[in-house]
Amino acid sequence: MNSVLKRKIINIVERSENTFFLEQVYSILDRNTLSEGELLEQLSVEEKEKTYQSLKDSEDSSNLIDHDLAMDEIRKNLGWN
Image (cartoon, rainbow, N blue to C red; front, side, top):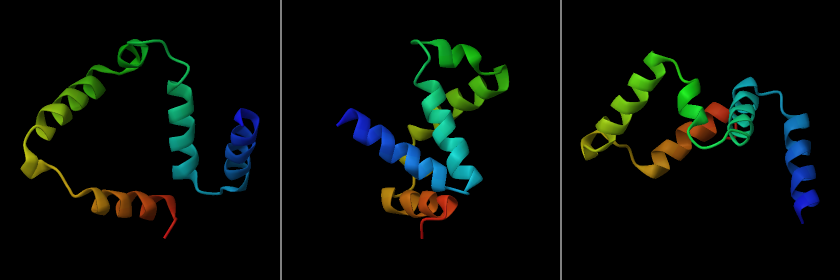
């Protein structure tokens, strides 16, 4: 199953012309090779500040959006709609 899944992922990536999608896939796969805490260490001071601020903002439910709306936006950005 592992090799089948890998082949499916490779096929999807090879067919895609969507730069945003490819950048996101690369980002996910690249992070997967990092050890614990390494990702945080690679962030700039500004990126760390934004990350911590986003976490703080997420504690207030008025700053959150509905899951379905978020998924619609993601699909739109990936060109899947």
